[in-house]
Image (cartoon, rainbow, N blue to C red; front, side):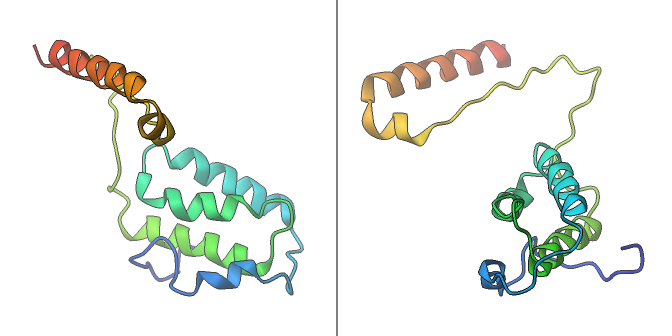
Length: 127
């Protein structure tokens, strides 16, 4: 991976290959470890979330296509290592958040309460 060429998108245009099952991967455990590490990395780099969650659906029976797609994500991360969220350990900022679109779609009263809580938290945080 050190000599590989960086890329500019987290997933390639032809990701439909991921749904092919004709080339099973020999080393399944290394693929699972890689996806687990990349899942952890999505906390600080949300731009890779779609690609990693798509690849994580295939940890049971990965193929060489999945492994190539995971390598593509690594090359994307290599292209811009400073991109992402950074949370300093000595900062007093507390980041709290939750979103569930189903609640907002079906229950107007709960969505009003959540929005009111977020607004009050924002006011307290910015004072």
